[in-house]
Length: 528
Image (cartoon, rainbow, N blue to C red; front, side, top):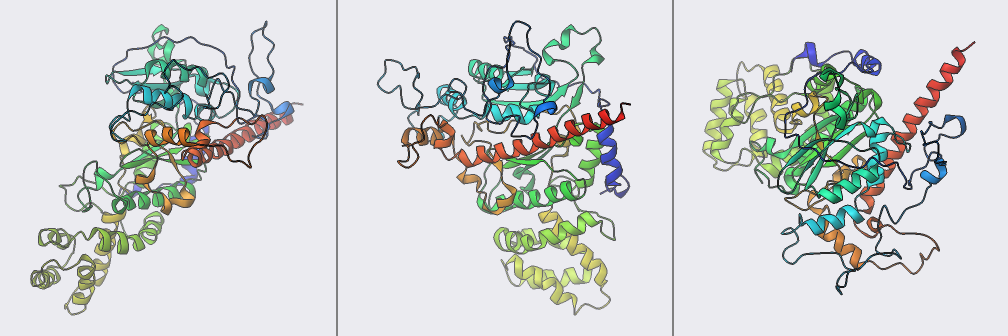
């Protein structure tokens, strides 16, 4: 890890990021097919679960909403703290439209295994109509209940069922996004940056340079396939709870670094649906960073370098940087249990050669090789202990070099393996939370870092299970509140994930509103 670039003055970096208003990368967007779709640009007319009062903005602090002269709208009508059955159709709605089929009231669960038809268009249509948290997604990306260019100039990209890829889609409200998703039925959709102008209008601009990305969350991607050279339980797209611990370790290390070293607060981790996790750093100072600052933070966090066939992957300078020293402290217990015991990476003879390559003393290596050859399939935990035991009998051994080598080994087998390219570019697109992974049928749910050890990727609900939950749900006898509309997601195992997302969005909007009000007050005091 390059100390001169990676380990920088964090305060200076963040201060610069806060002042970066529109000075972001002019790089061309990632090249993909550019087929576009047309969509009616309709004003917001739906209700919002999170109101202006919820985020602590009232009276003079309310953002201005542009309205048509002939339409007199009230904020409380647009963003009332109630649910709308039109926006989130519920199975107990009074005006549900049913077909002539006697099975119409049930969710369209196709025959076959739970994963065999998870991407069936009718199954996905039910999911997007009844379970996807459209309103919270809008509020998350818009940073306010009031529609703004934070959402309206945001790029969305759709992957259709025939693998066509539609870039530069944009929507003024979540209703128009929802309608287009239900019309096109993409297998998934991705979220890109906020642009300087509406992405749909980019071809009408006189100067191409006028269309550029100006803001996006700082993102990180961790994928278990990058651990295939050290995980022994699974490989490729397969995962189990043993190798998921690599993701748990990575989240712990990256999350604390982002919070403690860079001062970020609003960090959401999302399960990718199969074998990885994504981080979305949503603080405004993170969203406004240009590519140079993003590369700097990515470089700061990068310790593992080189592919599966490369030699030594960890080369950190001594004394250890505080971030690396803290990471070792976090990871040492995981190394003992999750690596030495559960993964047992050096049990077989052909595997312990890798361990010996990473040790600095030839005499010690020869002694260890002799001992391990005489004890075939000796457990990795025992082999790790053998290093110190034999080192005590080796004359002229450099103890300091051995300690540093062992630290590097712990880092190589536990430290996060990040897909750095995802983090470096302002215009990189990333899969949206709450979409369904087409291969597993699992929903890409947020991960509660306060209960990180409890997260089970194999226990994340599939779309088929969720639709079955709705059909099996019955109202509790002690919860008969008149006028209370229960949304379909509240009847399923998706409920805790949506509630976590809602609380995350609420905290983010409160902070954003507080900054706006504070700036307005400061501006008022400047006027004499």
